[in-house]
Length: 227
Image (cartoon, rainbow, N blue to C red; front, side, top):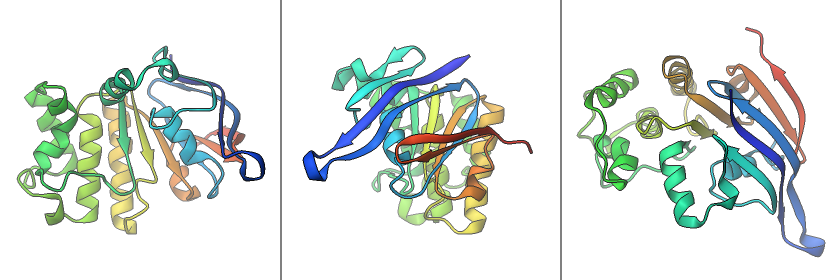
């Protein structure tokens, strides 16, 4: 079942001599439960694509559908609510709230909505991430790998339709990078979570089930990875 689709997605920055086409009529489809990596060199358009998929930025033209909702047509308030409830975002720099402890950082999307999570679901996520003994810690009391696991927990707590991860291992050493990838793979298998992972590292990209390569704002290859 298709969960995400783009149609002729185009993003142009600047005008005249400074015009840059970051995305060039890019169309793709991702099914529910897929673990897809999107790889490309710096400037290829991969991060721009992720920002469009997450509703963080708007395209110059084209459509983005998540669960049949055209997010490009939503106003800013509608988009903020949709993104909070339907899209889990994981960034390279964690983006945790420094004054909130681990528990509240994980619960943040639900707290902003005035909702309470199911305790069993919260406990299960915390256990999976190995953060049971860190719930009262502030971000600056955690290692980089632990902070990224908190960011993963935050992205999972609302059980979103799709998780978008932008270079999630970019600031981590090899051991922590492997740990974060294992967490993403586990959430994909255990919760049937759809994951789109942006990276410039082919070794990391090959951990997914499908690898899409982008060059100059277009898809240059789209292949299933046989493991």
